[in-house]
Length: 369
Image (cartoon, rainbow, N blue to C red; front, side, top):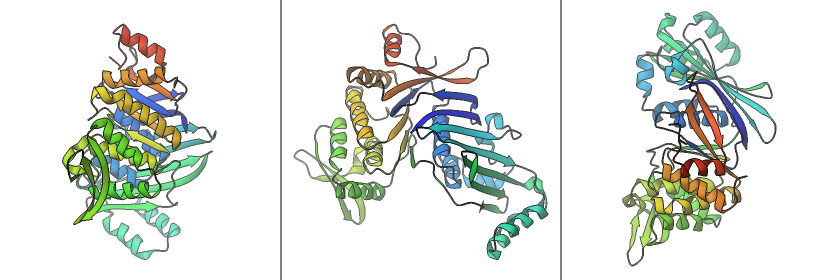
């Protein structure tokens, strides 16, 4: 479980530190305060991979065609103020007392001959070397390289590169992929395919854990009485309301898809860490406390750490109420993202549940206002 983090030169973060993370961590802040960027940093801390770099580009609606068209600008969005002279450092410590770090480095100038020589010394795959040679122009200004490196206890265990030019994008891996933690990111607006949800549900059903999803759906809609997966044309989840026939889950709106994604990620024990952006979406304020209590119970049962963001005052207050009513201060923590009044740096301020309650009761800012 992650206990503290330090983020340098990533997205909107110049230098930010935070500690005291618990089982469930809620991060509140205004729009464009860095909440999503924080989850993205946590994703790269847990799983420092080229695949996640590409996922994060797509989550931000940056297509690989753009990277290929403008390779010198392709990786800019990962760096604070698009500063290419300073590496991104994502540093964190966990309950196992091991120190880990993910580093992103951007290279816009390279020596063509040295790069090919390095390739030939690290791989005997002539097809791969020829493929990279084909996309590399002689003019280094038409190419950029994003390096992803990760270390544990100062020992480098990940060393990957994404090489982009106008002719294409290729990956170069000098060490095998490695995950510090299995990490599942649920961005705002992400809608999983019906077949993927159905496959996860089948796995949960085989393990005897499917009842948790039904209970979660009943929090959203108390008329739901059953869930099944059917392979009729394609594999999908079906939901049955009282007095009605089974209908595809896709007909029930995006909120149900997101709730299914959250719950199945936890009960399938697929992840050590779940990252949920704008957790309040689709959950009516009358059901928010019940939903939080269920998340606490499931996170403890399956030993999962949750980081969730919200700018909803109602969702934050519901979180606070559950923590205080059920004596969960050791398991649930609220962090406020705000700007330092002098330096304008983003800071993460940990607020205990009693302090958060005091702010809410006296109508004081608690979301970085």
